[in-house]
Length: 389
Image (cartoon, rainbow, N blue to C red):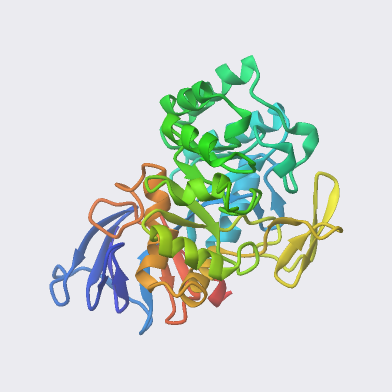
């Protein structure tokens, strides 16, 4: 069914357009018509005055939501719950994330994602494996029991998994010092995106890994050593790798906003990505959940173990966009790109998502003037947002 959306300011992924009509045709964007030039007879829906129509948010690091932890429930049904929970906060596409666990959990998660990828409008864009090839000294809340270096079976099976999922559908977070460059090259050749994280790698080792194909850094500054005068480490190497992408948790908790502003001053925002690192409480009123059999508490905007160790984040993508504007003092256009176009580019999906343009998937987010979510379209299908219930 063809129809138009009018009344909102439209952010194309590049610029804001006033007075335009966005024409949808089923699950795709048909056209953006300038003011007064919509096709005669096109049925139109008027959007709230002052609202913003923007490309749907893409979250590449989602551990859970709606009361579900993907590690514990690696099923298509759990994915549907997670997508619905995050959709209320503007996310129209996500990478469900498995943190360090057994090979059996990884395989079950891959099966669930493969099933979701066959369903148009599922909201699932691929799989993020955060581990198990991480540094045990920088594991954070990951279970040390499951941390390992790649086995011979992994060296064959992980590239096979990337090929099964398809190009850009597997994001693998690893510690560069825990793997060989040949493993990174094999993963990239198979179509995976390799990201550095949960690592104590020095700058030299990190730069070698980037040369081998590592192209992203997972939640910059978290689970990695601070930059030091005589050893900039993985964080320093990330900042000085202009072609690499950096994910940041912009919640005001995981990284001091002034530190993130230093990063932006050093490298700009062109390859920065907002992520949530969200856990099961997102979209619920729960004040705790279980992780590896341990209780994680939701307290004052934090998710922490009994010892106070951060265990994921208590945030959502709309909040991260608002924080990027208020805490990092970024232009709204830049913050929106960090939530949509940039992750689409990382995953090689920027000819389908991340922009409002003819031929793109109709994954859209409708924001109020204060950047709360009024609703979303996934594949052209509408659902109300957190602001409406």
